[in-house]
Image (cartoon, rainbow over all chains, first blue to last red):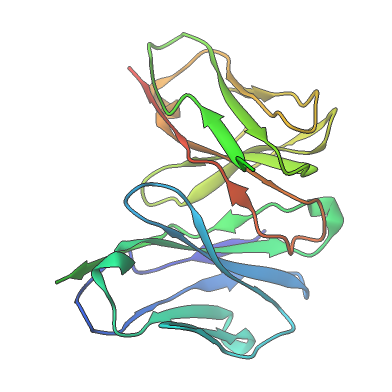
Length: 117
Length: 114
């Protein structure tokens, strides 16, 4: 069975500090996909990134960066120079590769990030 | 495109009542699903569908029913509401494929069962 663990339930930082969110996953599949979603206080879920299991390159998008390490089954997310607008709950999620499994996502418990001015 | 829409946004039920949460999408996606979100537990899959007439159970299906008569609509029925079903419910859709597709989520329905 698949499992996603986000050990940090809440992180509080002061604006302009960097913050790293940890995500550790378990799966028996050799091909899988990892996602990060953001849930701002308004409640909607916003897609941030998708990464497949064969692509271990780190990725940077503006102030966001992702570090995928297959050897440690981790897909960590860093916000550089945090801003108040980054305050949200962030979810890491995992899906299988097989079409039979559909697009079912297994989510972690989420990490609430609070950025104080 | 409206994307994924859900109604109602908020609902209060008494124990034992039944109701239907509506979900519709206008992106012609084959795959639709329902998740519930509870504090500290992330989102958990209730039911999903890979096309009209085809549904299957997810991780937490008990107490819920679904049907898919059209590509656009995927309603979730609570048969006899219980306080344990107090949660935020999200509907999602995507093309059906190998798990690589981004899910498009609706705005959610906050349900309270007293």
